[in-house]
Image 1 (cartoon, helix red, strand yellow):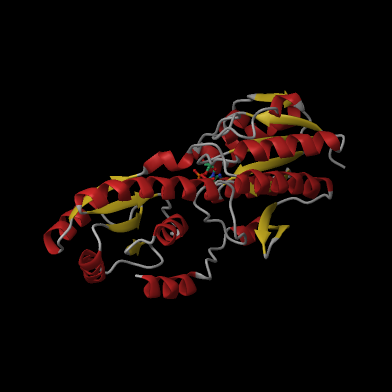
Image 2 (cartoon, rainbow, N blue to C red; image 1 turned 135 degrees about the vertical axis):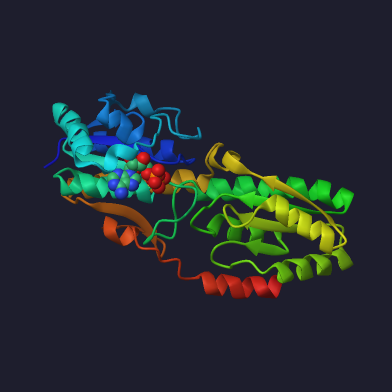
Length: 318
Ligand code: ADP
């Protein structure tokens, strides 16, 4: 039976991570465990920057974006001797279970640690919604709301000037932020890995928009195309002058939405329950309306299965 658990946030930060840390801390204390916060993810674990957390340590944190424990990237964590030194630090505090809040990279690190004997349970914290086996990752809802708010503002000005706004959103390996944002703002086109890019379709859709309104919106997932170059093509080939905006890290910040706070809270509690049950190399997920626990390996498989359906819906709306 575990007695002391560690909690860390790792990789890209996401709004709602604080709510997850709070839930882990409070649920663990309620179950009679001691909790230790590890600063800056695996880096702080390696550098022995670990502190005891109490109920009060997590007061007033829920509504704040980012992660109060900090996060970092430690490339060397794929080396066994680096992980062993980090594990030795956990042993100094007699920590026998670890909650890793992060994305797929953090999960890989967690899996490696569990293979070295530490009980690890992951909680999906990433704005990209790119973890397998779960319909939801903490931070996604806040990120898409931030993106939609920004596009709504851009629409006001592009409507005044008869322009096409091209907005690059985050989501390097997963088009969910682009797809949800595009659908929510009624974009003319959504360009992402899953939908691909067809320049003629872009031009046709923007020209069609120009026949009936004063603006057009194109949402592009990062790393797909140069938005500046796309703006040049749209300006040359349609009646609209196009302007590109890269939203960037603004999508990672801000006070988490209700959905992110509530899911983070439920997932944090579930992670503690899983550790108490003796689970390791598992992670929490949200599937078919329920919070569940699955092996980390399942979460590392790409299974964005409903994309075709979304694409068909889009084609009817464009
Ligand atoms: P995210 O968790 O948001 O996907 P990263 O991919 O940057 O973010 O991963 C966060 C950290 O997890 C990395 O800096 C590294 O310390 C650790 N990590 C990532 N991949 C591995 C791996 N294959 N083996 C061990 N540790 C890893």
